Structure formats: structure tokens, C-alpha cells
Length: 245
Image (cartoon, rainbow, N blue to C red; front, side, top):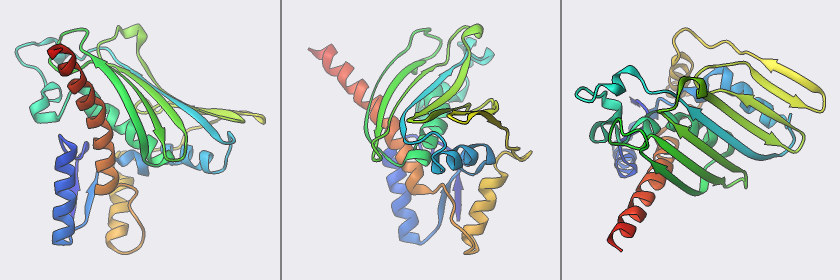
């Protein structure tokens, strides 16, 4: 069995090749989107399933972070901002968690569009990205990512708005989950294990033993790569076309 880190590959086409080879060899392939198994995010999914905020209307994702110290070392940049190795920049490395969570909550995305820019010029890949998505369930989502913002503008927030309330939570900070609906306001703080991937690995082991199903595999992992590639490659192609014209 194969347990591969996220994102699944540097390109969606590589994900397809991996899934084909796994099927050919009859080998199980899992992707380490461990947030799908964490009690914190399963609490959010449970609230959605219980219709604690009614029918979901839209979702807003924001991740704005200041540059890391190593990003300022032009002669020795980290591998995460070297597309040849990582597939992209911090959007590829970090936003994939959030895009995968949206897939986990709402199912596959059916419509995707986005724009991006490199504003701070600290490295080659994009440092600002804006995205709009529509899921097969009909839910609309939008997101903005910035990895070179000022410290005071730092933000890690996901808001899910429904017909009867709102759920607010974070992706990386694990701030208390906030539920606001007609019954008032409630907070939830499920405890995660010391080993952040423990729950996912347990789900993988359970599936291999025939005792359950892992929430993250090569099929779902490839979908997240597909979304990221569609956003970045389509925009890059458009920019190249405009430049030629």
C-alpha cells in the first residue's frame, strides 16, 4: 500500500498516472490529506450534516500570511517556492488543504475560475490568488490567498453561510469552531492527537483491514490537484495568449 504526501503530485496528469498504475498493480493508494480525519474538521462536517445552519449557500476561505524568514533569502529559497520541485508556491503547498476540505464537505467542484499575481517578487511563483468555485451540490465558494502580507493582516478563516446560520473555523490555527444560528452561539474545540496524522493513518489501517474506509485516496487527492492546475494553468495560458496578441 502507498501513502503519499500532499499535494498528491506536482501536476494533475501525474496523479492520473499514479492512479492508473495503482489500479494496474492492484495496490491501495492513499493521500495524506489528514484534515479529513481530524476530529476538528469532522465536527464541522457533522454540523453541516445535521443542518445546524440549514442549507449551505456559500463559503468564504481566506488565508493571508506574512512571508517566512527563508523567503527573504533570495540566494537560498525554500523548496516550497521552487515549482520544479513543489509544483507551485505556497498556494500549491497550503491552499491544497483548504480546497481538499471543500471537496470533503461539499463534493467535487464542477466549475472553477481564478486569477493570480506575484506582487512582492520574493520568488518566482504566485503569492496572491483569488478563486471562485461551484460544487456539484450547487454550493458556491470563493477564496483568497496571500503569502506576503503584513503581520497585522494575517488571517486564517473559513466561513460557511447557510439559510439558518453560519459556521466559522480555521485551517491551520485550530481556533474554536463557532456556530451561530437561531438557537444562539456555540463553540466547539475537538482535541486533535499529538501526532497530527494519527487519525488518518488509523483510517488507512482500518481500510486495509477491511474495517472501514479512508476518507482520502488517490481519486479524491487527484481532484484537488485538478482544481489547482485548472486555476493556475488556465490563467497562465490566458496571460500567454494576451501577451502574444
